[in-house]
Length: 256
Image: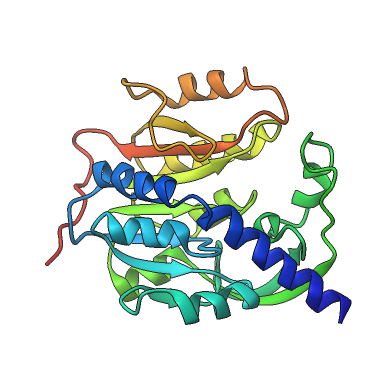
């Protein structure tokens, strides 16, 4: 009973956090429009309560939302627009089943990374979080999603320290990708950058927090991005990195 109450409180917290500012959600939709043409395919990896999936849809994308946590998948199944494809699974380097470490009260930081919680406990801002549950989840891959749905023009990945592993499961360059970054965990972001370099030539930009504006007018190299990340104090505002293939790389797919 106590566990169920804590889980319900965690869901309610996430809904209030991500749906409590409708103006911000509309701004996010306008922001996403710069990354793909109307009708293009987008993947939301780590959909959580679906606010980014909805923003991608409002920006004109055909959306595949992927969420492994059963409580959140049930919420999404009841509430997402019917034209968003929902897949109850995690995404990783190979298809399997595995254990996810779950924080019932702070489910946004649940992770498949076996050492994420230990590392996060040493970073300011995570001291109040307890990873107090485990759940077995199915794991698919980006390659499997692409085989089923097509190559996405845009992929948003927010999986609490498991981003590099998600990218290990794709064998083709992705036209545009966003991944979460956490100050104080730069090594994890470095692994993401190295994996993207294996896939293609990318340039980078960033967004702090839940803002809907890129930090820089000129996109940066991976080295420049890593240097900037190195200036951020542990525990400062997290955000999203945006990576896009440079000119001459395979073009983003159009709706057909």
